[in-house]
Length: 573
Image 1 (cartoon, rainbow, N blue to C red):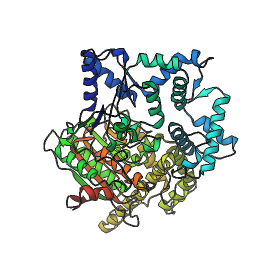
Image 2 (spheres, rainbow, N blue to C red; image 1 turned 90 degrees about the horizontal axis):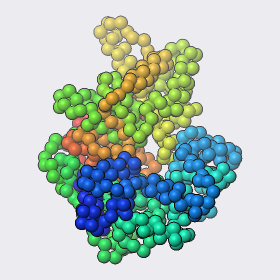
Image 3 (cartoon, rainbow, N blue to C red; image 1 turned 45 degrees about the vertical axis):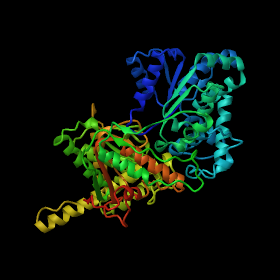
């Protein structure tokens, strides 16, 4: 069975009730059911729901935990010897692999290389087969396809020399022992007779191969997913398996869940409008592209969505903080029911500062807090050191840019994705803050001169350092419950009463390095995921310039034209 479940349609409830019903009817033996999902949190939620329905004993696991359990159990008989240690973080090995090749890498680049190695392995590529598939990848900055293959091979050699395996190897080795040993495969297939897979649109080729190994020739499989929520293709996930399901399993039944129990009709209408603007490629088939599910809200009318354009990023962050304060004080929305979602983690810095300035508690999900990031610590050290040699006469915005350039700041955003881009976003947030401080100080001086009041001194590097130190101290205050700041990717599977979608400019949404039609379409789906996180209140915000007084006008996202073509609801601050 294939269940196509739109956002907010209660797919977890549908899955758990189907399993519980099968157990109650005697069709399923609980211990022989494997329910698979992608996060430990989701697996635990499913287990608790099944328990509440009386379905105790069902194995609810991630692909990795299920594979690791089997691999450990069968290792002595299938492979022999002691079980190898698992590499929890690839950074150390990749750094050493690069040193062997006499290649220079920093922390951000190492993280991006690790992501590429993970993508290659879950896509079932080896160092020998990888090269042809790299030319269409957005490789880390400065890394050529040839160097990527060399790094991959060097990394694998280091693991083999030290008897180590990584998380991708856990899946690969489990597939290997099942495919190579008929008796072992029969034992596993006898243990688990029925499979349910949640978020099936995010399955990678490696996970699909493992699922095929578990199933053998059987077809007792229920998958649940939504191709319109495929947002992890850069990690190897593909909706192809979901779309091809009827072809692989002839006679498979498809159920569509379209009743949205989460969001009010205004939110649902915008989400539907965004997806309705999608267009298939000329060579698309029913197995590579499917019309999006049209959601039907079950909650009725709510609050009209709000649209705000700002002059620069800092004012956008301040405007969002002001709106959040109104939600807290006037509308009584709890802080834990408010989220601000953005495209890259590097965008959080200005938002953190704006919320801290108003005393609004917040928590950052899926990323380090702004001042905990290595590049920000390095920037603060560099600015403190440089402040000692300044005399107060320098052009502070230009001076700060010069200090940050050796750390990776450039005027234009890098075309590459991943950690390099996030590092740049973090440094760019400091530049935006400094430009805003400069513009505000000039305005204060002008007003003071006109009023004949004492004139404040011009902005200095010491002022910048003091401001950063103050914001660091404010961030370190403990937070028990607060507004959620999260990237759109890390917001998947969550929901809030009020959601702010910020930074909706060309270059961020869609992101600069999204060039092909498939990449642009994934950016659209990512915004769709963001919209459908909101239950009642929804804001769309963007800015004309990254920095105060910045040159040139940035366009708001093309996707907003699809859902607000008249722009009549937009307001500018």
